[in-house]
Image (cartoon, rainbow, N blue to C red):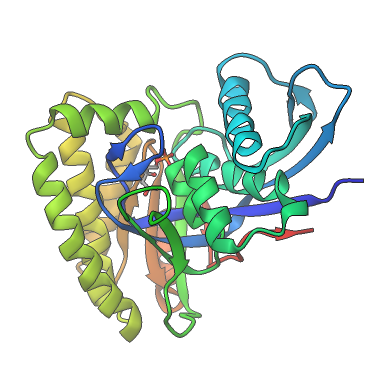
Length: 313
Ligand code: PMV
């Protein structure tokens, strides 16, 4: 009986945006994320010598086409790396709205990387590298709390590690779900186009290192007034680099929430970030949570704290 692996999503506070090496997903810049307690994927992988191909089931339904092919490609990478001969039945249960910028691919590929290699007892570092091949952000879901993905320069050197800081217990992230439909274009397509064609891309890469160094200091101090503005500006810079190639994920309600947060931040420390989708994530600390939730009462929200790394159920 195969075991089920659970991996939680993570949301980047300093974004990964742009790949130097597309196949290996080696990023142009290092990134930093928070693993969340609320959204996760459970995955079970059963190798079976009698199978003539991989089979993928999501929420108990057989999946074919593009989503399944990405999973099968990933399984081929695992088989090649570790000399596994059989195909597998892969079952996943997603507790994340899919493809809406809530990082379902992060939890999905991290859970799959660990579940498919359980018998090999790989180190977390190795699972992070492997997860990266499935989806860059998945490399960070191996670990709990704040996580840094060092960009590195090749497969060996590009992996994530936990940020070595005291636990920030009262840090919170409120996810405002303004639309959980599938996004108009994938993060991969959008970031590739940005890195190839956006005149702002070199500035993005340069500034993200400055942001990363500064935010680490703020997290060490548990200073939301330092961390918050860096998070918000880093996200806006990522989206600005994307807008310069005529693409955006913002919807009217995204902007509405951004405006509410910006108004509120003249009084209390609340700051937004967005990913490859229209939903807005707002960071604050426990003391300001009620006021934030009250300001967002007309929206569907989920309040998150930091969550665990990937583990066997
Ligand atoms: O891992 P991907 O290919 O889904 O890319 C994630 C990109 C962002 O979510 C926008 C940023 C990040 O660092 O997670």
